[in-house]
Image (cartoon, rainbow, N blue to C red; front, side, top):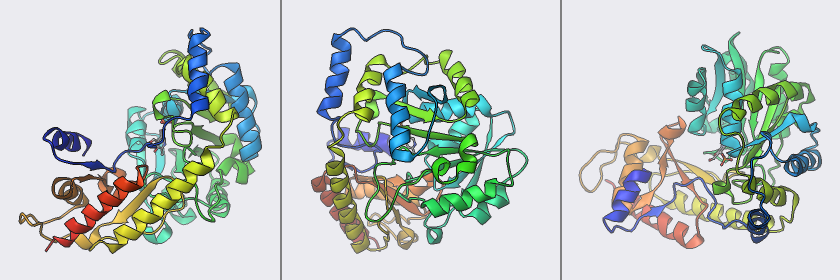
Length: 382
Ligand code: PLP
């Protein structure tokens, strides 16, 4: 989709990209300044593999104050994004044939990361009726002696679904009978939660799984720092040690400059956050209202992240003005790109069809224009 959108842009067509998974906001000034200060003061050398001491300290304090989770410093590590933390964990633990349970819809990278690390993804489809969330019954049914990990992502990419503390506790109850299964809690969208929804993380609300949970987070989404590549994870000391061993022979560590900037992002002034959240919430409401006006589309207001996952079932079987029949959500996405000049991501990419994902990490003007184009395009289908 991205390649096709670029191609159309190069041909001079106006394309509104609502496909990117990153904030449109600029990195906050105090964080940028911390990075600049690091460069100017020569903090540009190799660092320890897990990260610089002040960074590990602010992460430890963050977990303590915000999540009620206590980790010793040797239980924490940092990497080039939450992505590398997840990869290091999988790479450190999976043997060929090991299974990783992934509730779908899921972030596109999870199954491929598992395969790259030699494991087998076990995908569980979580229906819209269940809020796109994993139920304890479905979870238990898919556990085998080869299950190594459950990958949980809340708030979710692509659905924005947020697991409540009770829902997490119910999943953790299942784990009481399966001591060989560990949990990867991908909390990267933690701060982006709206309305009455409350963020919770499994190691905190179900202490009996604390010893087998890797809690993953980062500065990309909340602090608008995708390009700085800074993620972190905390969990059992022996797992962290194994992850550091792998990282020591691959990336070594993320950029020293990013680490100093992240000390400020995590431990410094974050008064910009409520403003970000307010804007995301208003944009979410705008997109949900408009998409529900469109012929054949349907969506509910998600509780978190910055995505709307819309059903396009009502468009399947329709004919485009050019005479092509729409059979899949990929056809829908291609039609919206070619006829309306709006880039979205088809649900198939997240292993759930027929849906598409819109990212509302774009300006209200762009979102309004993009949604109006979608409404007009859907209207033109016969
Ligand atoms: N986890 C999820 C669910 C994501 O959507 C993303 C990025 O899109 C990441 C992890 C990776 O974040 P980072 O930029 O910290 O690597």
